[in-house]
Every structure is written in C-alpha cells, then in structure tokens.
Image (cartoon, rainbow, N blue to C red):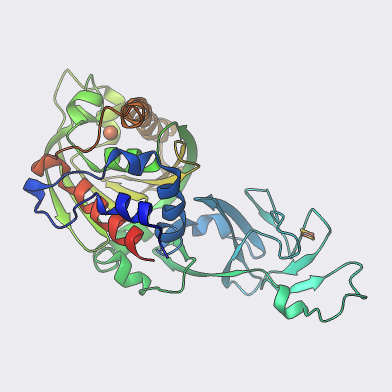
Length: 368
Ligand code: FES
Ligand SMILES: [Fe+2]
C-alpha cells in the first residue's frame, strides 16, 4: 500500500486535461527520493524495456549485462541459440554475478563464494554445502526475467502484469520492422548527464528548444516542418529536414538529410530513423539526479561499405547534440531543485508529447 504523503504527491498532477490546459508533473517528481523509488518499482519493473541488440549476442554462450534503475540484468544466448534473461544477482548472498559488460561463458561462476550456474540459470555447483539441511538446488537458480525480441532489439520485462510486446510497441511492428531489421550496428557510446532521467526524456521529446539549443549550425537549423502522432505507449515525430545553405555545420547536414522519424517509447527509449542512419538512445536512471545515455549508431549500408568519415560525421552529430542537450538539462535540474519552480505550461504544437509521457508515468506510479 502507498503511504498518504506519497499519494498526495502523486495526486498533485492532473492527467485528465486537454493539451491546451495541461501542466507538467510537479518539480518534486524530479527531486524526491520516494518518487524515484516508486519509479524504479512501478515504471521500470512493470513495462517492457529495451536492453540491447542481437549483435551483442551473435555467438553461442555469449552474454551482456546492463543496469536499469538499480536492477542489474544479465542476458545470455544459450548454445542452442535461445535467449534467456536473469537478474545479475547471485541467489546465495546477493553478490553481482558478473561485473563484465559482456563476454562468453558456458557457465557463470559467482566471484564471492563460487556458486556456479548454467545458461538456463540452474545452480550447478555449490561448494561446501553437503551438510546444509533442507536445501534444494532447484530453488536456488537465477531469478528469471521475460525476454523477447523485435527487429533485432532485445526487450525484457521484470514484472508479472505484461501485455504482449507487439501490442506494447504498436504501431512499430506493423510499420517499420523491415526497415529497422536491415540496419547494421556501427558503434555505441555512453554519456553521463547530471539530471533526473525524466529531465532528459522531456528534453528529448520536444522540438521547442531545437532552434535555440541546437542552433548555430546544429540540427536545430535543419528542421523545416514536423508533426506528432500519438499511440498508447509511444509517440512519433515526423520531421522534414532541409539544408539551409550557409548556416549549417557541414557534418550535420551531410549525415541528417531529407527526413527523420523519431519514435519515443515509454519509458526511456528513442529510436531515430534518418535516411541512411538509425540512432537509438536508451536513457538509464542512475540515482535521482544522474542519468546514463547510451547512444547506438546503425547504418543502412554495411559499415564496411561506408566511408569512415560518414560514420564519424553521424557520431559527431549525436555527440554534439547530446552535449548541447546535456548542458541545458543540468541547468533545468538545478531550477527544479531550487524551490522556486513547481509546474510548467506546455506548448501544444511542440510539447504535447511531454504531457503524453507524464500521463503514462502518472498511470504507472499510481498503481499499487
Ligand atoms: S554470493 Fe554468490 S556464491 Fe556467495
Ligand atoms: Fe535536443
């Protein structure tokens, strides 16, 4: 059961208004440890989460790890090819089973007391436990999580109350499966931003700041027109891009041409599809005011067919944009924590998708 003060904090946001009347979630939703804990449990534990891509598990017996909102996760490919996902937590005394970000192993051995597990999560080795009574190995396997894929992306679900993944992702499976599946992984980079994860999501969603924060030759100079389409768990921005001669950074206009489709998936994923590239952002909470942003680059052409400068240009644009966004997000976090600010009104044209995010968030948080 939720305590009364938490209930009051959650009730302070009205999710029943039309966009034109809407206000954002209150500032304490970005700064309050109690709300953050509730998010870790309700939002991240009870929704489908993007954890990786099949290129990370090409080989049998390969694995990778990821931490999402304080939950360490391990995804493996068995020898048979099947994928499994587990909590990256040893059932003996709770140590993290592996701290490697990826690797290959036919069994996983805990670095604390040496318990070992096969890639189905079964406990196979328990040193010095013969004298322990009423102990069953079957009850001490790894905690299993639901794992599924769509278009080479790997999703997990940590909760019981699941809707089918294709329904959660709708309408992406119907519209863009082939387009996404054909993209080749190029490279991945991680960045740390000193703000609450929702400050970064809010910013990534709205185009209002584009000409100012990403002006001076950045991607903000490219957007000619756009519209936003809303679905249950995602919204899509369709953007027409244009090269305004003389004011663009050449590297920006070369790697982001003609149009962009920006898919935002609740709670923390952006899939940006450009003519020749796809860029995904996974926005990971690392505490109340620290966020890790994992940016992966994909290209339509096989990377071996691409001139090295094309990849470098795409990475440069993502990095330039991230730095511009990160700097302003840190300033927003300061304002939200100051006590001088509570809620904001929103531009219907540019910031309606923030209200969409806040409504989904409120619904998830208000569940017991
Ligand atoms: S905590 Fe893993 S073997 Fe003890
Ligand atoms: Fe931005």
